[in-house]
Length: 554
Image (cartoon, rainbow, N blue to C red; front, side):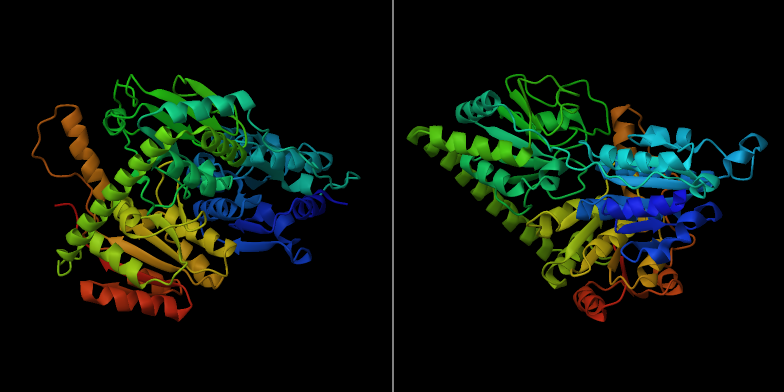
């Protein structure tokens, strides 16, 4: 058979059921064979950044190997930022690009370049088959590497002539590959003893807790210990229910602030993440000197990568946490149970106090014009259907999303990693494709939405009934905040304005843009109209955009 046929059959054999792509001439060997593989659905994007981001979120939402297909050197260049986001999100993603005919390699053909070298810095592995005989083995290796913890994107360049070469090599898959081994019994015992001895334990949970299916057992462990639980500053999934009394929100983006939050703790347990992604440099450690530091991971690569540890535990997160919980429960004496119960009761009282304060604050925002972002998020939460998945890129309103909305289980919430913007509207396409039986709400800032606004067309083209909410403060608000911090940190007295950070002259017309791409849309400036608009948008059963005009930075 020919290389292209082998490639498609190998995708099917590996369980790939979705390709997100932007078609190009060198992708014809793949595109021309799609009709023969009805089990593989192709989602069309108008920009490579949209295709890769949607594929990354699809992979996150399903756990399946997913393919993003981009077009030669300029297309791969367009996709690099999104591949970086997939790398930070640990998405099991295969990115391919059609490459020019290798017989023209020395002629500097149109659109030609070293694609393998371009992709290498933002992928776990980057390669190009030299002949059709290598296509099957390379795809098998790509799938294996993409899923090896920590998971992440790989890249294959597919020359058009190699895809049309004959090969006698058949399709092969890796077969059974053992998962993460169980942690050593001695490590489990030591961690349980540390938890039993701690006066103020806290836990920081990363995306791998959600990805591995360890959320429920982590909840049980946190309740048993009366431990505070935090999430990473940027997270792609839901590692802990956000309305649970033990949950204390996200950690900050600088070490001094994290240190202050952890000042009273004597045990910090880091689980399933890179820890920590800082924005600003602080010389201090994020941990108080008296605290013991423990890290649990399903791979040795992350253990102790950024911090010295008192205990490093490698093993399956669900199994390890379950065994720690059982060991701790069996060993707990009445005195420990009393201390843990008292800690849990304090956390419950603090949670209720925060909830009451939040409700009182919201009551004062009811009639504000422009609309207060916190009120907008609360109105969305009150009126969206139960079970709605939220894809969040609200940026400066993200604290309100985490405070007001309720996310109970993995799969209720997704967001982008890496800090690159534009992931929300594009990622929602992948999440809705992954969960056609659930409603999806994408919340994005206006500046972020403009990075991948073409995703609206993909939603309309594929009849994906996503409700897009653009929180339009008509500025890069987060940049204004960061400029304030920069001036303060570097002792730069200034009363100068914020340079080039306003999205005005002209204003962005999201309603017109959406309608131009086949998406129904409505602009909301009156806070009393939000609830009915949200209900109407979801009831429509088609892609729908709400442009909520909210207040900017004071």
